[in-house]
Image 1: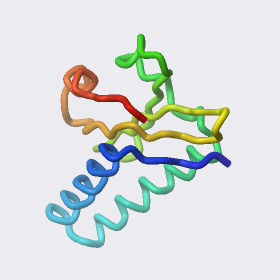
Image 2: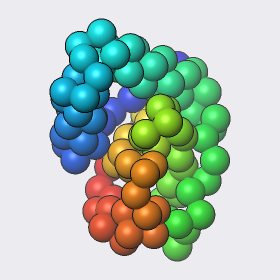
Image 3: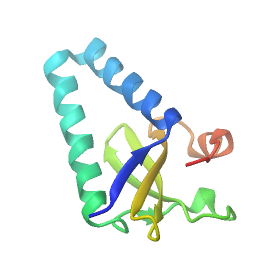
Image 4: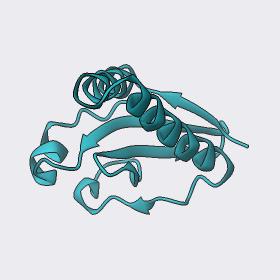
Length: 109
C-alpha cells in the first residue's frame, strides 16, 4: 500500500471544498463529502493506477493521473513507485473549464 501525500495547494483546496459543502449543504453532507473523498484516497493507496492519465497535463516530466473523487472534485496526482508514494498535486473543480485549471496548475508534488 502506497503512502498518500497531499501538496499544500491540494490540501488548501480540499479544506475549501469541504467548507463550501458545509456552508451550502450542512455539516452532515460535508462529512459525507469528506468520507467519499477519503474512500477514493484509500483506493488510490491500494491501486495507484486506478485513475486515467490526465490528457491536459501531458508534456510534463511526470505523468499526471486524475480521478473524479466527487461529482465536484477531480484529484490530480502522480505515482512515485520508487518511494512508494502517491502525490496529490491539485484538486480541480469539475464545474469549471478544465483547460483553464490545467494552465493554472503549478505542479510541484
